[in-house]
Length: 465
Image 1 (tube, rainbow, N blue to C red):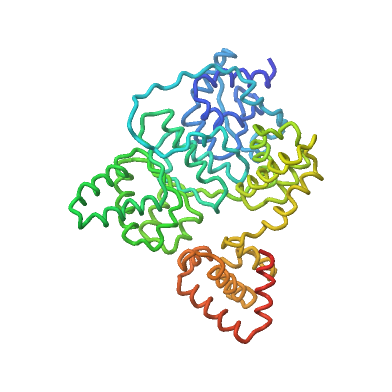
Image 2 (tube, helix red, strand yellow):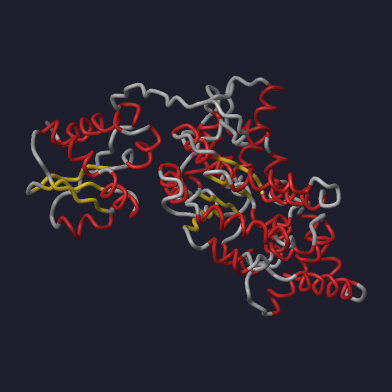
């Protein structure tokens, strides 16, 4: 039996012994490199696979090899860059492991759970199977899988951060749904705004005589869960009493070894306006960031979304690449382009959706939606492009004139063109205080009274939007 066939047989043995999500997370991307001197060398995609495979699945792999070969081996897990150094002149076997669809699949028996009257707020359609993975989100997905398999035992809290539209919420729902499907644990998904509203409800009932019951209901909802998933924690900025209550909720859950999963549009270190004791607790577990999808991942996302659409048999690869090249902001922007293309296709009903058709259908969308008038992020991009600097410059610490003044302009436009408050604008510019935003707005307002060139610059920036 060749090594490729042997490895496929091993996977066929392993698959029925683990659930589908675990197989995808820990086995689907492994490669058998070589068997030499009674040792099996296996390539793994990330460092974390070494630990999980060694501690959780070593015996499973050993048993699978023994069943097929009737021989006991040692196993060494190596990253791609470690293979040459560890194996010397052993030639790497780069044959890809066949996809899970080629493995011998046995139907898994669903776990029977007692019906409970509990609203988790989870969206069932958001799961690991339809969470598209690339280099920009692979670590976050892997960490999510670990937490889903062992809630409360590792990476607690799990802190997922990245800008809006990159799939943080999808991943959180996927973790929650996995836990619900594979255990009897009580899971609650909420947002920081919902948490704040529930807490305010306690305060509003203080003078109505039923505050004790409302407070008890609040604690039961948030502290008697096994897994608390809270989205967009950055919106607790400015709500000092709510932050205090969340601090106590966090402590109660963490001390009871209950899993906490948090998302934010920035890292814990960048949440400068949150209480220090909260930010330090966010670092207790594992902070993982999700980057904007690269070209390859954008194409994968588009193909996955098109798969069940009516245009799936008509669309050419060149169209997918065109959209992926021109819609680099986030996943929602990709979805917007697809929706526009679908609507145009429904009106014209072409035989093929080729590149020329897509350019015509998306002309206004691609050209005019690079910037979003009501979005601080869109304003930052427009200002950065106009002054030939980067968005990171606008958010960073540099105070040179060629960066500091455009930063003040961007703050001014964010204040005048959006409905965001001063704290929110300050957060978007590297966690600056609201007084810094006020100073920037006052500075630009004053300069506009005497500087006609500045007035023209602002008009040109707004024309971009």
